[in-house]
Length: 68
Image (cartoon, rainbow, N blue to C red; front, side, top):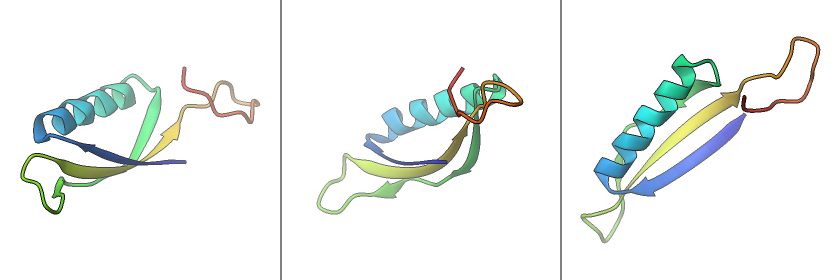
């Protein structure tokens, strides 16, 4: 599992959320959790968001995890 902490403007984070969900629809990853956006301290511009992602397995008997 990959744990991500993303930081950016709300627009950038929303765009990246869309990319993650599109990759999940294509079967490349499984998004196990995706948080809401949280405001960073001392700034009104940047926010953060968290995600837990599993990469797609290459083959049924292949133990290596790899993004296809």
